[in-house]
Amino acid sequence: MHDIKHEGNKFSLAFSPCPNDTFMMDALVHHKIAHCNEFDVSLMDIQALNESALKCLYDVTKISAAALPQVSDEYQLLDAGSAMGFGCGPIVVSSNKYSLDDLVNSVIGIPGRHTTAHYLFNHFVPEVRNKKFLLFSDIEQKILDKEIEAGVLIHEGRFTYADHGLSLIADLGALWEKKYHLPIPLGVIVCRKSLGTRLATEMQTLISKSIEYAFEQPWSSREYIKQHAQELDDHVIDQHIQLYVNRFSISMGEEGHRAIQFLLSNPI
Image 1 (tube, one colour):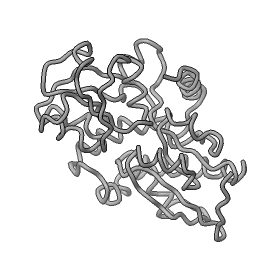
Image 2: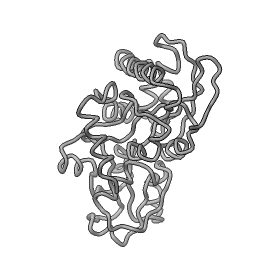
Image 3: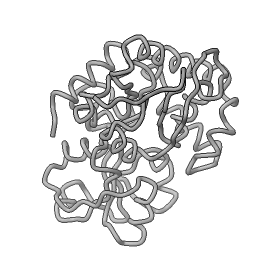
Image 4: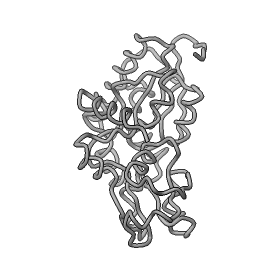
């Protein structure tokens, strides 16, 4: 177990710059809800978050749900702050009118080796071997530049690919839902086990309260969101939040935990 010393109630907190995370965490990190903690906040893309968690760099961090097995010795899963739901899964797109079967010999852009997007792609298209692991925000342009033939899009890419002339090959989330009838566990929040159960429970409660505040005061977080978002259009931001922040974010509940357990019991 890695030991990290703390100054009072100051903790390191890492999450993505995507609107769903900044929307959920704004009230927490800016003390819009009452608490006595201070957070040293780091924002980075999901693959960087996964790699940081593998090194146990942060006290509380967002990771891909598919990365849970790799970090479970050091981190415990929190019930709040997840990106999970229906109709919100990664999509596969191309500038060509491909089917999934056409991808076997194609070069595919994947938004990180340890991401749930990669897990789902492997689950439904296991034959593909020629992959390039890329920053999620670069994949659309790499397709347009013909550096890759298709790519798996997450986050804002789900809402903008058609505007850039790309075609949908498959919705991996829809395939998951049709086959398993469970919500898609995309991202989750974890807390270092060495901080103890009490602190983990406190963090879980604070994140839930932060999300509830965000829903009650939806424009309060907009400035923070726009400081970090890839797409600044309010409609795109609203779509993003509506899709990825929901009842599972406040609490995964029994259904959410079943989805997590199913994913963990079916590794690729």
